Structure formats: C-alpha cells, structure tokens
Image (cartoon, rainbow, N blue to C red; front, side, top):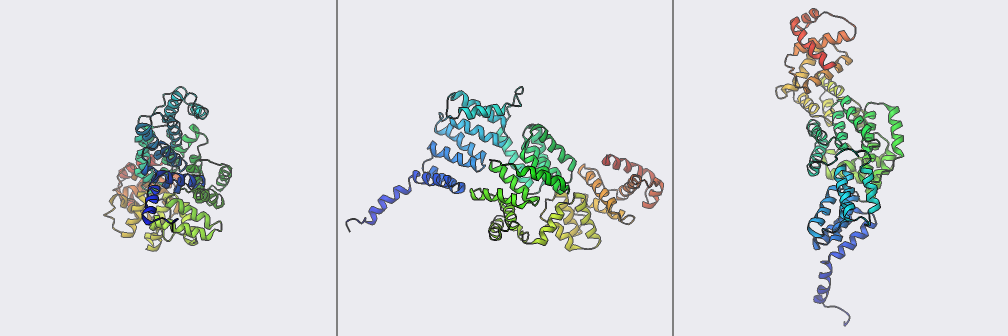
Length: 483
C-alpha cells in the first residue's frame, strides 16, 4: 500500500506531464525519424499549441512541412519565428530560400539566401547557401530578378490549380495567362497553362507553352511529364515509350516531383513505375488528396496488390464520393475512359452529336460520366444534348444546329471533325454563329475546295437556299479560322 499513489497524487503527477509540450515534441521527433510525416506534424502542432513561442519546435514543424511539400506553410512558420519569436534565428532565412526555390519563386529565394549570407558569413549552412545562390544566379546574372509580390503569386497559382482540378479550364486559362504575363519565369504557371489548353483541344497552343518551358528551363520534370501525357493522348506510342523510359531513370527528391512522376506513369499505363513512386510517398506519410489515392489505387490494382488497391479506393470515396463506379477493377469502364482520353475535343463533340442523331441517350450519359477532363464547352454541349433544351444553351446550340443542317447533305466523319474544329474556334473567338445556313454553306464549300472537289458558290447557295454574297461573307470567316 505504501508504494501505491492515491488518485489525487496520480492526478498531480500525470496532468502536468500531459500538458508539457516536450512530450509531444519528442513523440513528433520519433515519428519524423520513422518517416511518418503526417503523424509527426500532428504531434508538433500539439507541442506548439502548448509552447507557441518555442523557436526550436516551430522550426522543426517548418522542416516537416518542407518535407511534406507544404512550402508555403513552412515559410509562414519561419516568418513567424523571425517576426515574433527570435529575429536572430538566421538559419530561417536559408530555410525560406530553399522553400521559395521549391515553389519556383527564384527571385525571393535569392533574396533570402543573400540575407542569410550577410547575417551568417560563417554559419552552419554557409556552403549549402553558397551553392544555392550559385544555382539561382546561373542564368540571370544580368537581370534584376525580384518579383513584385510573391504572396500574390502564390494565391493566384493556388486559385488556378483549383480551377484546373475542377475542370474549369477556360477560367484557369484566363488566370494563368495573367500569371505568365506578370511572372514570365514562373514555369509552373506555363506548365499548367499548357495542360489547360491541351484539355480544351488547343493542342498547338499547349505545345507552344510547353516548349517555352523546355527551352528556358531544360530538365523541368513537370514539363516532361506533361509532354508524356500529350504523346499518350495523341497515340504517339513510340514517343510515349521513349520518354517513359527516359523518365524511369529519374529519381527526384522532392515529394511534389515524386507525386507528379507517379501520377503521370499511372495515367499512361506504366503501373509498376507509378506504384513505386506513389507507394513510397504513402509509406512516408504523404498527405494526399482524392487524386493521389485514385492513382495509387489504380497502380496497386494493376500490379497485383488487390487488397491495398481496395483500401486506397476507400480513401478515394471518403474524399470524393462522385468517383464511385470508376474503380480500377471495373475494367470495362476503365477501358472506355482510356479510349475517351485518346479522343480530341472535336471527336468527343462529334460523338455527342451522333448520339443525338440516333437517340442513344445511354451513350451520351457514358460520355458525361467518363473519367476524363472536360472543358465547360463540352460539359454544356452534353447537358444540352441530354435535355434537348436548345434555348437554354443558345450559343452552344448554334454549333449543333449548323452540324444538323450539314448532316442532311454530308455524313463523312472527316468532314464533321473539320466542322466541329472550325466551329469551336469560332465559338471561342466570340464569333456569332446565328446564321446556321450561311455557316453550313461556307463550311461545305471550303471542305469541297480542300478535297479538290471544286463546286461553285452559286451551286452551294442553291443547295442551302442562301445568297452568293452570304456564302462569300462566311467563306472569309472560315478561311481565317482554318489558317
């Protein structure tokens, strides 16, 4: 009995211990050593709640955030240390420089690195800092590199990323165009802009932005991954194999790069490589979103890790219930989606149009629910086809009505792909498509001319019951769009 503690004595000893931030700090360090970053960050957050002015705990959490790829959150903590806790903790400048470099904010990285060099000429990270400065100034010796407002850039980039993830490609393009105009060396925005243009069917423009990145920033992993996706969608199998083999020898250190590489390999069907990178991130505590678990589940399933794939799919549905039905073991759906991904925008619109002609509502629903990126134009075209309420989709309905007029006279697939490609360009340019007969006649005339099947404008005018002057007017517009 003498050795036993009363309940009050037990409480007196246990409660202060649980309220000690050091307890959670050491638990966090243990998890960090075990590479369980998610658990480590939670313990450190709890430790900081108890000791909000402890610079050591704050800097350790900042380090964990960096390892998790949360560079902005890491810099928020490091700035807080310098502003509110210990202005002489100069290594924070070096850590911030690294985070900015990861974000692509190389000018801000340079400012922080030089600040550290000035304050700590013989500091612990002097050699690493000198290497970073050398790397940052390698290509910009004669330019003034400083960005106007890094916080503004980060906010805009996050907003653009959200728009891309929700398939709001036109809105994303407007914002990304603004970013690249204001920050022309921010390559992440160029890469995202390239993807956005590709997903709305403007392949040439997409490749133009991608080549800008690869010319100015050789070795940019995101650009090469995007190029692999482009080759895959365009069914350039030889180039897919060549580039995939090259990327298979890349071993990135950053979590962001590992995620990009793994997701890209999964998308193009190189599942063993995808599983390698995505599984390694999962084991290290990477805090992913539904997209991360989606590709991890696919990679696991197609490499024979069925139970793990099912577990990861549960995580997908927990984050995004709309993914139900697109499980990797639903092979028919997967193959259908893969086939849809290989189609261009005009091919998908033409497929919707043909489904309307044959009253095949099931096919339209399949196109709607396919797990492929869809532009706002495509989404509305599908909704219009399902509802048959052409008045509610006035501008987009013009595309359908023009094609419908042409369908009476022509049924050639190549012709209709030309028609949809041209009309989509006109729609995006804000060109009026109200005169269905005029547009139809001009498209018919131009196509025949391109196929070396000459026909007079007078003959086409009679066929579509329009004047020759009307055809002449719209022929000029079609030629401008076709150039």
